[in-house]
Length: 325
Image (tube, rainbow, N blue to C red; front, side, top):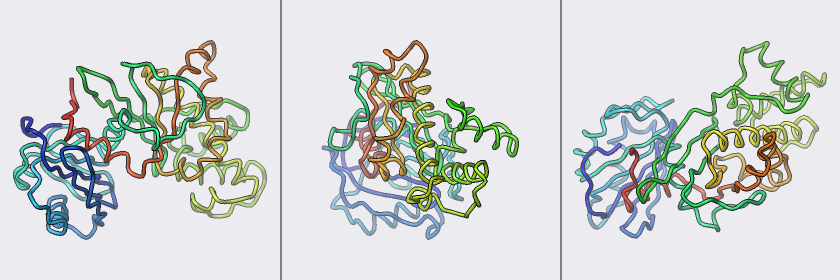
């Protein structure tokens, strides 16, 4: 969302605002990012105070005239409320208080989607084959605390992000063990959606459910403990999550016609990259009935850039990407 008419590129302030952390950086006209800092949201009464504290510490030689922020939550109008964070703010009031010519605020996965066209080869690892089709949509999916999904669509020389809520789509099973897991959870919690099994908490849910189904004592574990675990339930939970991610990523590609490629982001997959490459992710991504040839042609990558949202935010400043048609 643009709060003020376009301005010529200059020094910009970018910010990735989540429930716990606010990550700030400056970028110049070439897109170079510098002076990255992470602030704890709980230390500041609101976004404006945090941004002002960051700028006071960064002490740029000239004040930034442009801003691009992403927030964990919906962006619909001038008033923004952040999920799992008491901060709320007006885009226009914030723009004026920071003396910006232009301030863009987008959903966090819209920023990730805008990053996709700008992720260079050194910041992505291919999983499987395929060649992107120029001019076609790209898809982004990212398991972390939750499961984020988005599309990015080429338009008028730029890109338009289309954030969605695919993490809350109903989760299908592709084999008997997955069906047993989903059946067990459905009888306890109702309909099972993707994020319940494809996320950090989803990894714990998988470990717990597999243990119960196999008659193995359930031990309380964190996502990191499950991921690093060596017993059969830990190994199978991680493998099953990656297989389910392949199913959901393939569905996302089909729904969005994402022949430009699918980018896997988030904090979990890069941490276990070798296991992911050996998993059934790509096999399940491709397994779509009579559409295997269609799916084989779509490339899938794991994004290894430490903060792809910053890449997307920089594009909003340097290229003035359009967030609406």
